[in-house]
Image (cartoon, rainbow, N blue to C red; front, top):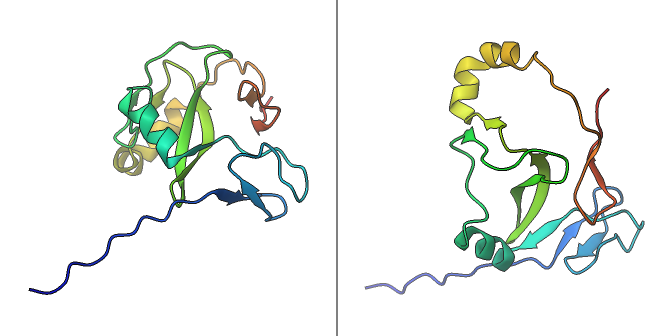
Length: 139
């Protein structure tokens, strides 16, 4: 039998600044190059602790977001940035609905029609304890 291939997992310790491209260590809250607020990030270990303890789930299949709604109860959405680092890419509220990619492709026009009903916007969406505005409110 041949030798078994070596398995290596590359875990990152920094992400690139969206403004200037400088490397931001995971321990830093701002970019050392331009002082821009760093996005909220989780390490590989932090992500899987949250997952194992049931505080995080895979939303790719879609469904109703269970949780409280309101500006103080933001539910962060993470994406894998690479090298074991996860970044916040959005915030949700309980009662919102995630639609799978397949369903979106199949029913796009109907979803666009449904989404024409707009509710009140409670303001700019920011993470507690962070000054960075993720998604400015559209008024």
